[in-house]
Amino acid sequence: MRRQRDLLVLLGLVAIGSLGIAAFRGLSTPEKANCVQIYFDAESRDQLASGKAFADQLRGLLAPYVGYSVHASGIANYQSGEVHRCDKNIYIGTHFDHRVPRVFVEDFMSAKGSVAWFGYNVWQMGPRLENEMGLRFLRMARQEFTGFFDEVLYEGGFFKKNSKTLTEQVELLPSDMSKFSMLAESRNSITREIVPYIVQSKNRFYVADVPELEAGHMNLMMAEILARFMESKVQHRGVIAFGLGH
Image (cartoon, rainbow, N blue to C red; front, top):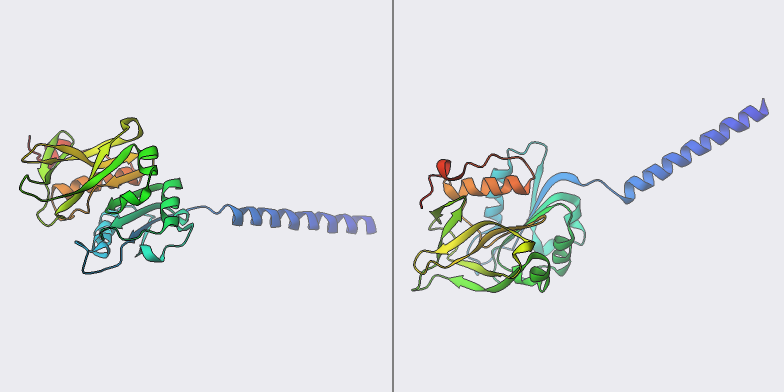
């Protein structure tokens, strides 16, 4: 009788120990939540668009993804490792040369889930921009007498950017096209020069400005780009539905 009691106690201790190990493992390797975290620059008079307002526009385009919560916060408050809490993360750069926390850049580049960077400050990735994404920062292309990158080439056609879109764009030079896919390009309607506009490098996306997401071609295109970002199957509407020019 005593031996049976001792055996039951021993089995109980083993069971409790197993539960403790499982719980510890669960804490040490947490599952990522089904959420999208959007980071934006602090509001200031120097910026050409509101990152917070653009985050709200993105929230609207992300609304159809049932099961995903969307959170938004200032990039200045970023803490190391936050990128790993959600399986999708977005940064909106609306303030020129605004200091992006170094820990965010490191987490962005090492993230396993989808990450996207809009607009300014991509040069703060340093050599990793070229070494890992195959792109080299050239300059900020601004509206001049020689025109501007005011046309978007997408799915075999083109459309004009909205007049409210930022009047400048990050100009990138492809240095290794094996490291990224060109999802869209922008073109100067006067000089006909073409540069990358939206690229995907593995799980990383980059958009060379912060577009105005009003109803129209830009809105439809961004909805499709976000479908890629969310790793959702999407049927490309392409030239016919967009009514794109040639």
